[in-house]
Image (cartoon, rainbow, N blue to C red; front, side, top):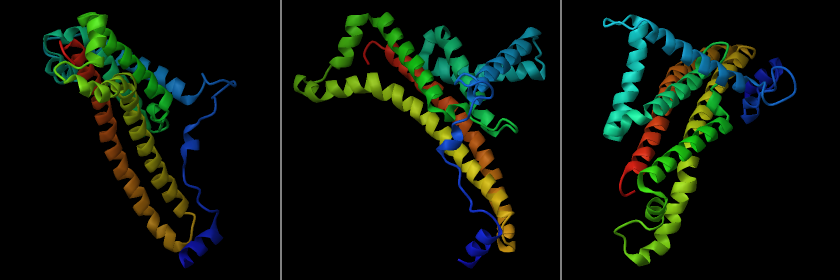
Length: 262
């Protein structure tokens, strides 16, 4: 209590970061299309395009470090998220899976890049858009593969199930395919990016604020900064993992649409 009193006397009360800090004003003008997240989306597309164009421009049998980096990312998505899940039909979906993985990864990593420090998908609208696109893709694939009637019938009436069970199972299946899948895949990405960035802000800004307090609190501030740095490395792992999980679930949903029964 004494330390807190001394701290309050030396400086203003610490106001922790909240969801309001994720709502950024327009950089210029007065509309929602000139905010930082919008520009980060555009920047990510430019960076990804330039990187892979340059890495493939002078492809050689013995790859340069730049070419090796590009092939490493592509090879990872191709093998672990394409071939392993979709089998022999994976090539048709590689452009989407590869674009999805790199797009999410770069926008997530923006959260720990100095002077940017904002993960785009901490704004839920962006995550919802990707969820809707994935929703459209895997349903389109299912309809093209099995036909509209069979695809819808298999969703409503799962084969091999006793008829009385449909009373309970059919509403669950409808909710799963039409609501739960696109909602949960989006919320998982958003929640991880939002929570991770919020924690980083709390420890970094909290450590900075402690430096302005009494001597006892100044001694504590390095621990807050150290924990914030450790969380940054952990957040990097989470950012990579979330890009992988989103793409993995997308591939699994597409594989379900390609299956004879789902």
